[in-house]
Amino acid sequence: MERGQGFDAVVIGAGAVGLASASALARSGRSVLVLERQGGIAREITARNSQVIHAGLYSPPESLKTTLCVRGRELLYPWLAERGVAFRKLGKLVVATDTPGRARLEELQARGEANGVLGLEILDASETRRREPAVVASGALFSPESGVLDAAGFALSLLADAENHGGSLLLEHEVVALERVPAGWRVEVRPPGQALCEWLECEIVVNAAGLTSDRIAEMAGVSIDAEGYRLKPCKGSYFSLAPPTIMPLDHLVYPLPPGVSDAGAGGLGVHATPDLSGGVRLGPDAEYGEQLDLAVDPTRAHFFAESVRRYLPQVEDSWCRADFAGLRPKLAGPGEEFRDFIVQEESEKGLPGLINCVGIESPGLTAALAIGERVVAGVEGVV
Image (tube, rainbow, N blue to C red; front, top):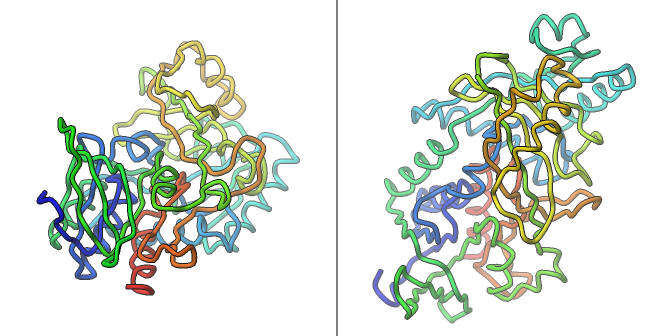
């Protein structure tokens, strides 16, 4: 990178959201540079999650989480198919394990239909068992639009699309300062192995920095506590069933969430996810804290087995093997109310040309293409 080089847009972060934003901006005819602090793309949130394509069942109908999830999913399946990225449209069973849960399935169905999710169907116990013989439940909500994908392949396809439209990527370049200048923004970065920083100028900065997106927003001049942008990191661990042939599943299987929406919850509960290789993964749990690592405690096998035995009673503790963990950039702390995605052009804060993507947890992977669309719309309203 030449010192002082200019671009129309700089995207901070090469996860799915950053790369989808870069792809959309490059397609709009803008020169785009993606800056990533890691040595490769999609190594943090994008790589460490369930890799589920969500239908849009859980969040309030008017929320960004819902609108971007539904729009993103509509865009995602054709994108994956056209580019040869692996995916399976499995469908999801959200299961009730008792009679009161059946009424909550109806509430969840109504929420999903209000969100624009098509094809939702409530199944009785026998039909649930017919479709998924390993599941024991009083009933289930079937969502045909849910699935799984190869998140790494998706990220590569986004990068390829951005590059095919003139975009560029710089790895191991960490953003250390942002400053408003007459032309837009001055971005200071630290290249690998160098004590001195370099800088460039651009009209637009897209903050898609994931786990550090609140810090980048603060660097740009946002009062993150006053604006509610400070993240509350939440760790989610996963266990896999070994060997994978013990209990194959044909669908995603989720428990009923704590409420009709995911408000106030660390997640949607420990669920069972078939992966693209034929295995089954259990998780995630939810552990809040400031000093979180990515180690998975193998002694938690009993907790994970016990969690899914409510609807998969044959699962034994000994089947569960520690797999991996990820961190979620949550805006809602434990016990707090629902918090929506922040995808915001910040002219009203006196920061024109800055677009913050903060708190993009699940279903952010599903929503990535729609977030890219919204980023371009935000840019075109200002620049």
